[in-house]
Length: 332
Image (cartoon, rainbow, N blue to C red; front, side, top):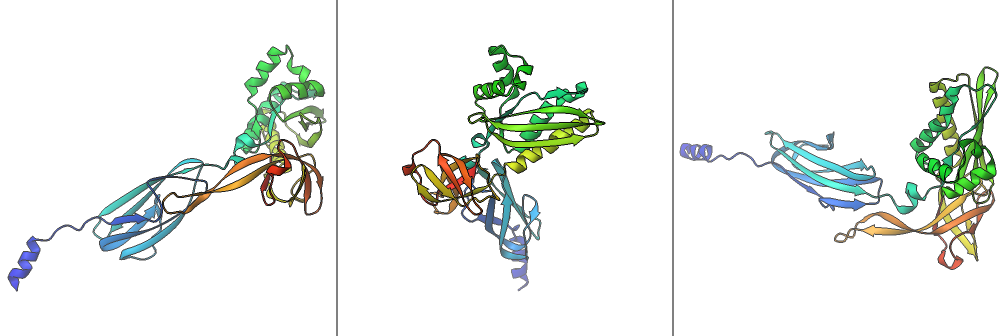
């Protein structure tokens, strides 16, 4: 009996590291999802004491064979997820996967309403610091990630080519002409007015195709220094964002070149453009698991009438035959 224990003592081997297996995930995979559901199992010769996904604990109980799950938020582009396991003897194992998140075409910034911001006209004894308001507003709009803001250096090129000064943009007809040359669907123009002890800024967002004013916003501030103007510009950017929410809905009926959507007056306004698209599910080539949905843009439409629970829109760049009931729409 003693020789048996001695033999086992000398034949003892160090335990092997845990084994990690993930369900339905390849080493590198592309998805069209905002979140990834990570599911798997860990096996070991001794108790598993720790399991983490990107250092977030996911172990619910200790054991030699355990299952785990985790919901991971995905940023656009490459996401690295590392699953790590450790047993009671300190043996460790890791498994790394790369998930590439693609944003469906209709949701990409390149498809959103394009605009450019022109210099604001000054009225009254406005300090030189207020000249920075336009740049602050552009930066704030870019930061909101709602509109596709035309690069400001392109404006300088157009002005030079057209032999125009920046003050020429105070005229709305000239502003709309330059906006079209910049391939911007809308322009923001406005006034900075000295009002008592503060500054009042009024801005208009104008459609370059129809010349209609789609939105008016204003802000007021007591100070004229850079931080005060930066705060006012941020407030104005938020106001424009709130007036143009990224809402989505469905086409409920199609009549020739006119469509009806389920976007009512609380969600959309007249003269706003819609992106029409059709969702196309993306499946894993081996498992058949749905990895999200890309979409194919069918065209655009202009909202002509808004009712409490629906809206009418006129098709702009596609034929009615290309549109189906239950195709999707989203505010441009």
